[in-house]
Structures are given as C-alpha cells and as structure tokens.
Length: 65
Image (cartoon, rainbow, N blue to C red; front, side, top):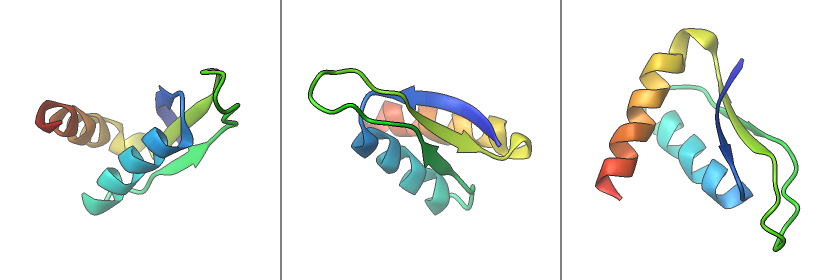
C-alpha cells in the first residue's frame, strides 16, 4: 500500500476512500486525527498498482466539487 494523499480530518479522508471504493479501487485510511487543533496525520493508502487510477479519480472528484 502506498500513501497518495494526506488529510487534516478523518472525514475528508473517508470521503476520498468512499469515492475510490466506488471506482473499485481498494483504499485504507490510517493515522491520527488530533481534532479541532487543525493538526492531523490522516493518510489515504491504495495498492501500488492502483496509484495512477486513484489519483485520477481524486482529481476528477476535486474538479466536480
């Protein structure tokens, strides 16, 4: 598994994970969210073979948002 993005909140990471899983790309969220301080280390991981496809899905999602 390879980290492809870091997020400041668990919610942001989970939304990205759900989008990837909807595109049949396995994804895992790991790390610690420190909460309201704005500090966090929540990372989104995908299998190395799926990195390019996952990044494309996330870019497409950001364009729509």
